[in-house]
Image (tube, rainbow, N blue to C red; front, top):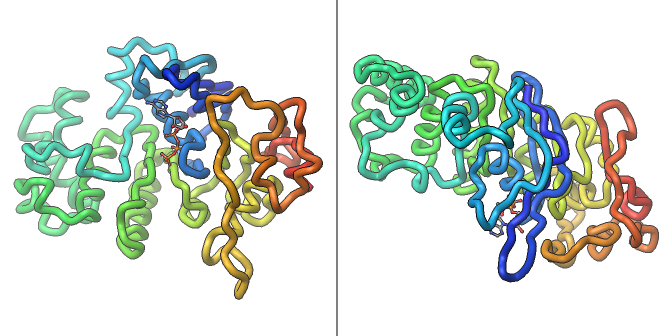
Length: 322
Ligand SMILES: Nc1ncnc2c1ncn2[C@@H]1O[C@H](COP(=O)(O)OP(=O)(O)OP(=O)(O)O)[C@@H](O)[C@H]1O
């Protein structure tokens, strides 16, 4: 349904060209949840914002690639057409709903808005559907609470409102960018369970962006691991978690409570991600590779992503596969 090929996006800043996303390709099938995981700055958000036409240009620039959504190339869509797709066929929810919700509009008005904008629904119909959607999103006493303002809701309830708003037009894809990072663990689970339930009911595909492999392991069908703007490993979730091959994926897994060996201290990935303004030469994970064999990492060219078993691809750096 969504097919991204060779997407590269960068930011032309005074400090140099930040190569935020390089040669990223992936597919999302109908109803599937794709988890995109990686440390801060690895290019997860820019990958998705590029498809939505949401990176600021300038300094941002789509250098190459295509993102086909059921026959429409999102990267070549005129802004007007893209605006019609955003919020209708692709919706997004973010980490902090307070920044996306308008403090001056009631919850009901905001949830109904996509219907008015994208479907030309009348006020009465939009309100009735907003009420239905808020109830589906688990807002208690939705009828009364529709007329409240965002600040009168808790963080978890605000995220439910965002989910109601994002799904009211029954989009083909929901992009959830760190949707639960700001919430405590119990509420986190409730919100993710809600996304999964509504997704199953509607057949929506979800792209779940997170730095937390623990979250994607429970909710994703497939996982893309990103490092320094590239996908280093991609596989069905079970396969990736049971047979991680890349040293970076293994390092992420070792650093997650519950996934690392019982009794062993939690692992911390040493060092910092590379400076993205520098032209990469060789394997970018080499300086931080303590679980593989850095002496074998490529130094003369960047490793390519190769399929090692059906549906499981990994960058072919001998040092990271060691
Ligand atoms: N407006 C911008 N101007 C310059 N550089 C940017 C801009 N937006 C993003 N970047 C850079 O692009 C790179 C990728 O950022 P991105 O936000 O995609 O990372 P991420 O993996 O989503 O991280 P996080 O989890 O922190 O959001 C980073 O190096 C970031 O500094």
